[in-house]
Image (cartoon, rainbow, N blue to C red):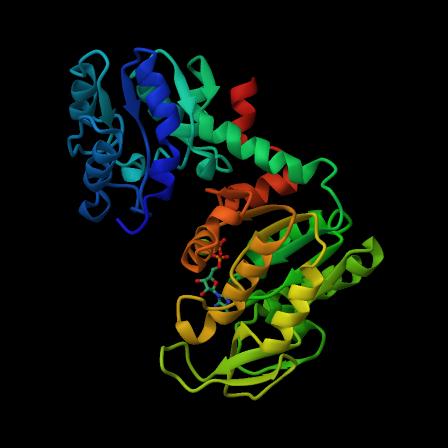
Length: 364
Ligand code: ADP
Ligand code: MG
C-alpha cells in the first residue's frame, strides 16, 4: 500500500462503534477493477494494515464479490463485537450502477448504516447511496469533519479568499471554477490546465497539454471572471522540457511563447513569486491540483514553493485532492494546513453544489 492516510482517517468512527459494542462490517473499494473479481485489487493488504492500526483482529476472506453467497455466509459467521472487512465492493458492476438488488443484500448485513466515505460521497453507488435508503443511516466522524471544514469555505469565507487550482484537466474542474467566480477574490491557475487558458488567449504553448475542445469554454470563463470581479491569474512563465522525465534538460520560457517542441511542466520562477504575492494577506485559501508534474523532481519546485507559501499564511487553509495531498505531505507542511481533505472530486463537487448524493440521503 502506498499511502494509508484514508485508512487512518477512518479509525475514529470504527473505534467509536466498537467501544459502543457494535459488530462492525466494513465496505470499501480499491482501484478500478472492471466490475468483476480481480486479484490485483483484493482487500487483503487493507485488512492487514487496518488490523495493525486498530491493534485487533480484522476478519477478511477473499470472496467472489459483494453480495455473493460465500460473502453472505462469512458475514453471518461474524462473532459479536468483531470487525469484518468485505471484499472490494467494485468486484460487481451493480455497485457503480447503484443497482437496488445489490443494495438490498448489503443492507441485509447490518441493522444500521454509517457512511464515513467522504471521498466517494459525490457518487451514488450501491454501497454508499443505495444502502442508505434501506437502513437507519448516519454520517461517520470523518464525513462530519469534512463537511464542517468545507462548509466554512461555502458560507461567507473570510476575505480575501484565494483559490489555487492546478492538475491535469480543465474539464475535471470546470464546474468548480464556474461556481467560484464571484465568490473567490482571486483564482490562481497552474498545472497543465493553465495551458488551455493560455492557448485560448492566443498564446503559443508548444506541446503542452491542451484540451482543444475546451478552448471556447476557457475563453468564456476568462470573460466571466472579469465580469464577476474575480481575478483569474495564469503563470507568466513555465519550466519547460521536451519530455516528462527525471534528468531531462529544462528551460524557462514565457508561458505564451513556449517553443513548439517543448512542454510546460511547472510554473516558472516569476510565476512562483507572482502567485506567492497574490496569496499574501489571504484569509481563506482552497487548493486543489499541483502546479506542475511534482512527481518528477525537475518540475516540483512550483508546487513545493506554494505549499510553503500556503502553510506560512495566517489563514484558514484547505487542501483537497489525492495528488495535492501527496504533494503537501511530501513538502512536509501538512501539519500547518488547517484541513487536509481526503476527497478530491468530492471536495470540488461539495464546493460547487453545497451537497453530495451520498450526504443528501443521510438527511432524508
Ligand atoms: P488531484 O489529485 O490533487 O485532484 P489532479 O489529479 O487533478 O490533482 O492532477 C494531478 C496531476 O496533474 C499530477 O499527476 C501532475 O503530474 C499532473 N500535472 C500537473 N501539471 C502538469 C503539467 N504542466 N503537464 C502535465 N501534467 C501535469
Ligand atoms: Mg488526481
